[in-house]
Image 1 (cartoon, rainbow over the protein chains, first blue to last red):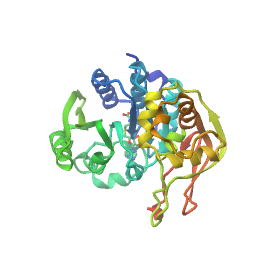
Image 2: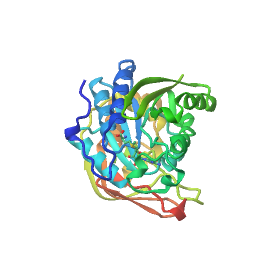
Image 3: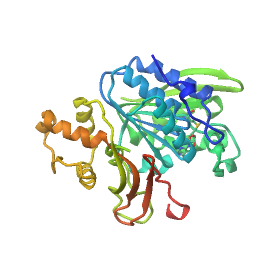
Length: 213
Length: 122
Ligand SMILES: C[S@@+](CC[C@H](N)C(=O)[O-])C[C@H]1O[C@@H](n2cnc3c(N)ncnc32)[C@H](O)[C@@H]1O
């Protein structure tokens, strides 16, 4: 299966470089996709950065013959510009790029998505780091790395369609079992598991796979 | 940005009631050919605000969309082709999304809408 290629991906000093977490996310999408039923998919990637994962998702869906529309969302101007270039370089035409904070973007919708992907700012940092508006926004996660993640979790019950799936990147400091439990408590129709885990330098990365049944 | 994406956006500015849909002020619109897939259209139809799609298409001079849609039209290939074109093939490249109540304009540049608000707007 063809996914995204680094040589066709745009990033720079202001855009999160595709890294171990990005690659784990794509591997998790690949793994899960073998089970995706044949039907159309409305998808969103939150915090698309370079666009590498969005591209991979669109390419996977294309190769599986699954019709889809993907929104690639990021707060950063540099990121959305990079994502647009990355999508173009890969010939992906099923995605639109939007610049916004997910907290505002997701407030509108009764819109529900079939696939939601988020590799969030998960690194534990002092909470002040969250005020920064530079590249730190791509990793600074505040206390336990959970501040942005927890803001996001509150939207999940609302935005996940019936049979919808969420792929969320976390590190061990985020307390992955606690995240799964919090989601199940928010909405009892959600259930999740750790889909993949990988050690990368000091980080123990996981992709959580949450589904609505 | 396709009209499908437009259909999902609203103005998040504080203190207004009428935030949807954005009025489109276009200075560049392109057409991009997309694979025609009736199943995708039937999947998306219940998730759309039809009047918003119709108004957006009208404002860009994309004709042929009916004012309302009945179930059996979703089996009619001729209708689905018009629907497909408006939803997926018409792409806003440059222009503005204008809030229907406040008139706040959000720029669309190189196909990317920027919906970020200033601190005093949230
Ligand atoms: C860890 S990076 C992931 C980038 C890319 N998805 C990847 O996997 O390589 C997190 C991304 O989230 C974006 N981001 C941070 N806070 C956000 C917010 N409130 N709304 C939307 N995007 C946000 C950052 O700009 C950054 O691009």
